[in-house]
Length: 509
Image (cartoon, rainbow, N blue to C red; front, side, top):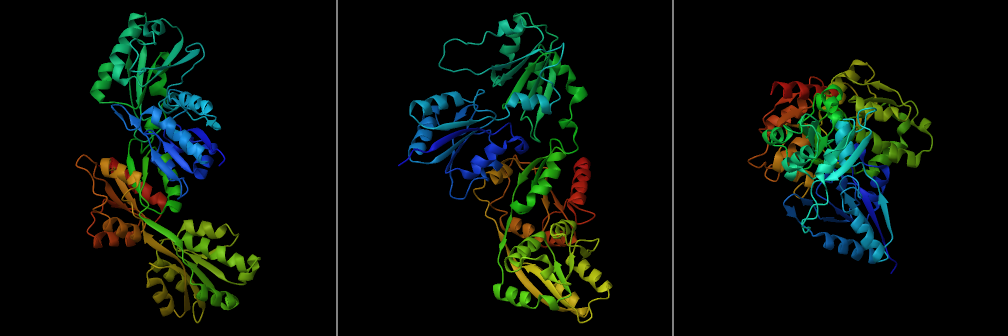
């Protein structure tokens, strides 16, 4: 059997946008993923279904798997011919023990690759308004560890010597447990007690928190603020710029935890919008949408495509699945003939427009009922033949209203919506433990799935109870039916309107 390979991969500081393209590529190809505590749980979802996932997380006061066992694990899987990704928070070679793992792999003749990641100090400085170097103010950056090998009798870091440095920024990892000692030693080495200093916790994530002071006041400020690991300590004149150039902590949703419940494929746009506004986003994909084509019905409709007047879509999923099958049978988009397109919502319209097709009917209110009214208002439905692309949970309201308006309607089933089991999902664990400031529902099916899994998603006593937000009247009606308390509803059934209502109601809260 040929030997596999181990990739020592930096997962970055937390923000998924800071993960390298190479890291994502390797995670999606891995046979075995071995990951740490500080790795964002969403990264694990990039794995193939057959990938073996091994958690070896370590945090202060708790070590689940000794380092020697981790290294043995990497060697064993590689010798079995596996493609192994060792996923580490930050950068593998900066206080991540990646060097030790690389030496073990080299000693055992295991091929390996090292993929750098954005290390915590770089991210913390950028996201907290602390430029780590600054002309004429800080011409050097020193990365230090405040937590050394506990088996050593003496510390290797001579903190007093670093206190004597001039025009230098100190970035200290894993130093929260020794913060008072470190700051006292720096002052004993000659550092002015008035030197600015800061602590940044959970850098680059929506839960980021920071405290600034001086080397003489920082320890007490941190204690009062209850900041803890994981955090980076900064010491140096560059900390003075924190208030002036801090951009991240001033965003409208900074510090807010928001759970989103759309399907994994649909979550990306909503997630991007929320994270751009500073939120920490938890993905709880309560439903799964998969292709489920009525083959006989589809063939019959394609055979008579030229006789239809309108095709109606109620979701972007329907558009994708329709064209996927249509283009297998027809190589030319002109085979659609004179078919006119109607849809619910801007997202669905954008999906149609990808094929350079004009949407001729789209109501202002994104509901099936409103779409039927808009089509009837065109005056084109008398004896018109209409295709309505649907899923297994679509309501009959749209079809009934179109038929009442004089149309001859054929429904085309192309996809199915099913409940997702989140019992063992790591993000769901995080939600159960800590809760969220808000949870957003963009469909009735997600509401029903949440209600069915209410016991499995029950919050701990210490968790924050989230405000429940609805994207529109239909979703709100379903929330009422399952006795869910409604925190707010979007003025219009759109993601932007939902986010606008979220910001407004969180401020009020």
